[in-house]
Length: 125
Image 1 (spheres, rainbow, N blue to C red):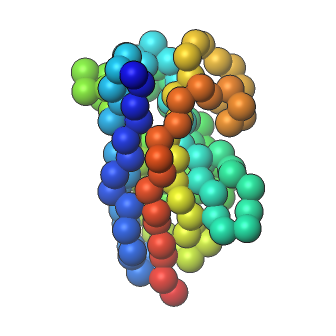
Image 2 (cartoon, rainbow, N blue to C red):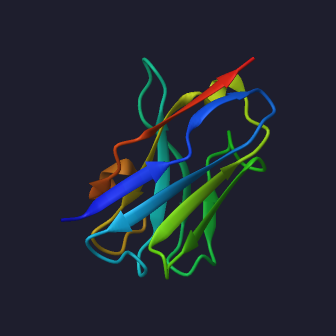
């Protein structure tokens, strides 16, 4: 059974930092792009960041570019999201996502087959 388990969320003041982790089990995703998405109350889920299988290519939403960094450790089957200079508008439930095959539309949540349960990030002003 495939599981993605996120951790690292919490409450932080604006300007602060958090590091999210996503540990995968049940199968390896080392050959596939992995992604982070988020959903704020009353809003649709949106793409945050993605990383290629080797880690050589990373992709970010314009709203987080320069503040967030995605990375991965394939030996640990784990993906990370370092979030710096957090803003109140970053408040959301953050989800880790993995595909069951190679994908090209890494920004499209419909491409991903496996999702974590989400971790809440709250940024106070």
